[in-house]
Amino acid sequence: MESGLATLDEFTGLSIPGLNSCDILALNYHAARGLPGTEKSNLDAWLAKRAEMAGRVKIEVCRHMYRFDPRSQQEPTVFTYGNSLGRFICSIALQVLQEDCGVKYHPDRKFKPDFCKPPDVFAHGIMDDDGEGGTCASMPVVYVSVLRFLGLPVYLVETRGHAFCRWDDPKGTTIHWENPNLVLWIPPDRFNIEGSGEGIAFYPDVHYTIWPERWRPIEFEKGDYLRSMTAKEALAGFLIERGECFWELGNTVEALKSYHYARQLAPDNERYKWLHGKRSHECLVREEDRKFEEQFRSEEKRRIPGAPGHSQHCECGQCRRWRENPVPAPPHGDSCQCADCRRARDAAMQPVGMSGHPPTCRCCGCVDERQVRGVPGSLSFGIPAHRPQHAMHSIHQPIRRLPGI
Image (cartoon, rainbow, N blue to C red; front, side, top):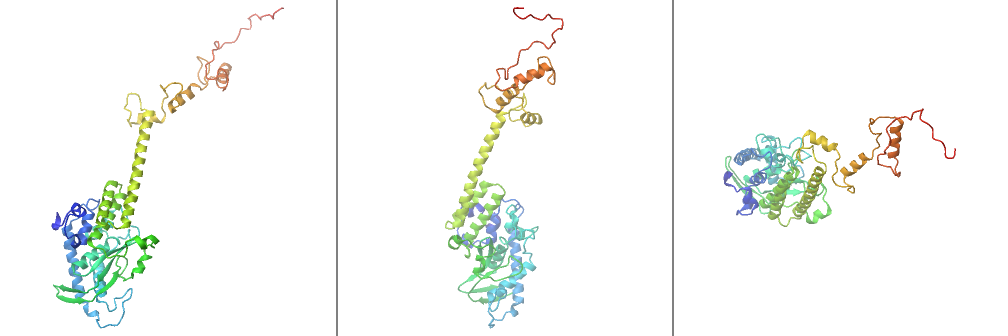
């Protein structure tokens, strides 16, 4: 167990005290354990890198503190910090993380997140040395971890198809930094921090009801969006992402387990209930389809066996050719309607020539034989005609007289 933190089983089993005090970066790391592409990640290295990022942020905030005027009357806007000290600190911090610490978007996942590649969804794409970048699902996690490590009241927030950060402090915060030394009281404030695109912005809540996806009417009532998430709620969201990754990778067992654990952590979240029910239903449908396909294939193999002397399930080239063009040998009786028996009857009713003649013979006897046997409804249909040997009558044979002559 790394860094004295609990394992994923302990997290999801809800057996450890103080879950809400756990670092969000560690929760993200543990939620991704077992997914492909995360095997080489190391949490100790992540936490050391996070501490280094926080050190850089402290230096730059202290160095640029002269730029902030606490007596300014300028109101904050979407793209400026105005007279908000919290916005000023976040603006400097995100700029340092993006430009100096490599917290950036994966160029190929900017608008198309791929759940088949978990390092793009979790923080591995940012925190691993060979990471190629993150997405809006992982960049806010790193921001929150670094800023909370510095003692700042920042939380993870979700909206439809997106995640971002929020400074949520109704009482005010005092920070005590060392190296460099800084003691600062930050007034109460609440604002959203958007740093998952190009640059930094402070959008209001209403912005996220239409971007990046417009909310449906039911989501205004039961969507559980735009809430400052506790560590427990954040872990539930990470487990949902874990389940989606496993689902896209075809591991339905691990996916359903992740949805189940997420619901245990956030039992009142209607979205998680709906997603768990949807995936469970799809899993049952898939299982039924798989059983039907296996049954159908077994019946096909049983109905059309392989080559003589081979096992029923042999897949050699000879057996495959035999199944594609089977030799009809029905043992089932005259009334059987299986495919083999029908093919055998059709082959038996194909017209043939006279006995002893080749199949392609076009003499008058063979042509007559084929025509007689090939006329449906006739008494000889399908029954070989018994004709004399193919020979012409002698011209010297005496002609029979008519009666009475």
